[in-house]
Length: 321
Image (cartoon, rainbow, N blue to C red):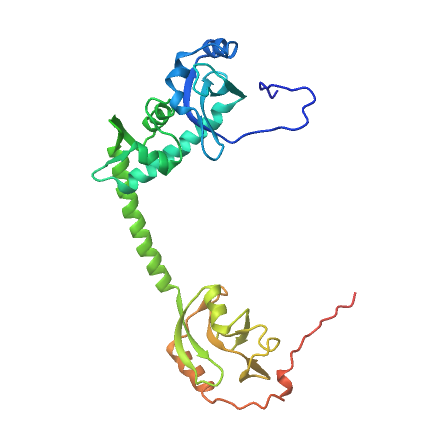
């Protein structure tokens, strides 16, 4: 069963809302919140203490004090307009989960900055600057600061947090710092291994560009790199001796210039020759194969453009049932 509390208005033609910012939080138990909600027009000391936190800014945004029932999660947003009672109020059902989420997100950002900027495991930041940076009004006396400190103290990354004057001083947990250093070292090792793997992922091929002699080169054995070499989608033509000609699948359709004859066909656009493993993977040519295909394609033929092999062809295979 989904339960909540709400204020229902009879024949309400439209829901009218106003932008609001919670500047302070007064935490209450269930009994205190019930008494307050049943006597909104009575003067309250906690409202008087937070007068400076309630105002309407130049953009018409209401900045208010939230009276929060810590047990039910409901709240009442207050704008006293300089008085000691809730001159304007809005009931806000189930507001606590939202507030907790925003506090947790702010704590995440603070911890991230602490890890980035800490010297010898310590980081100090100004509360006023933090309020602007994290877009949340942080003050030890406004309830929000207390909730944030409580959240930070429960985090495994934090060893200690001290409020002195207008500053928060955070000390990272020593065990966490040691783990962080180990992770950084592991990351560096992973980057080295990845770099080595990338270097080892290159294959030796013989490349034929239009109108140029063949060259031996090393290319990355990735789909993106292979496609870049032929200028588009790749197609494999199987050759003798466990080798492949990797050509542009749409070379003729895209009007690429004729390059070399290969068997009974003419290859249009750039292509290259590489090895074919037993597992169907592209592999490097050996020195003998490099020499073989360099000599095979050393002549640069001249084409008139009228050759019948240059016409795009499609083969249709029919089956009798």
